Length: 326
Image 1 (cartoon, helix red, strand yellow):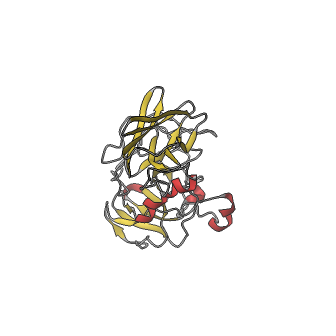
Image 2 (cartoon, rainbow, N blue to C red):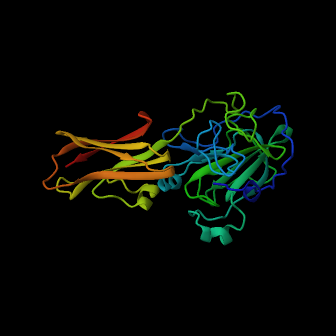
Image 3 (cartoon, rainbow, N blue to C red):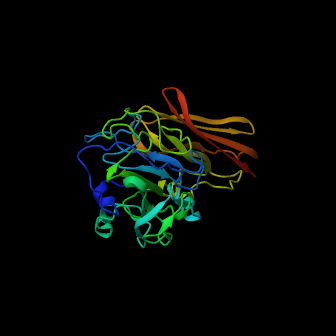
């Protein structure tokens, strides 16, 4: 996450007092190799609230104060470590690049190490007519373009990482014209007003807005540690019939006060557990778990789990998992 545009920039941005007309804009390809809504999720959009609050372009809350870009997040550190390619969203030349910063979850104690390099490892590309795109938080040792190099749209720049000021693995991409931030979802709109402008976007492909989602779900024999869920190591693949308990958990983003996370297990003998857990406050990321301590061995067979994020009585997102108890 990049909290302040001037600090985050590899190349300092020169902000103008008046908005420029959107002309000859680049059309943007997906900047990350993933299946949106399955193996990656847009977890934050550009902040369109001019005050201390935060609103995305739909006037919903998938943003945070002064956020100048779009965050394509991965569901776990394991997905990051497996390697997810970052690609140029449009053809251009490399104006700035950085590599060598470690991949580590940000805490306030990290400020001295980061030293204003909030973007972490990244690349700035210059396009025609004063347009720029900036790619942040890339994995150490993967940025392989050089300053002045011409790159084509879709050309690899590096891999998604955890460098700079960020608490989860993601690609932050910013779009600017003459130094001014532009929201690629509503480039004609007032940059300080949500819900303004046409529905026209700069993306080549249609990118559907997702107001939150279940990132992952899994079975375990106890309530897992949050760190293990974020790492992608919490799901157990082998559960014995004589296990002490059977637990299902769900990990989600974009939670809103009064949302519900429904957790359900169906086993060989029918419904094993069905729990609806209330989300009591807005949460950018969260997990919930439920299960049963076992007084007798589990019936052997297939157990299917479902984690569903529900808002105003309607399903927002769901993940299904299964496991065979031997």
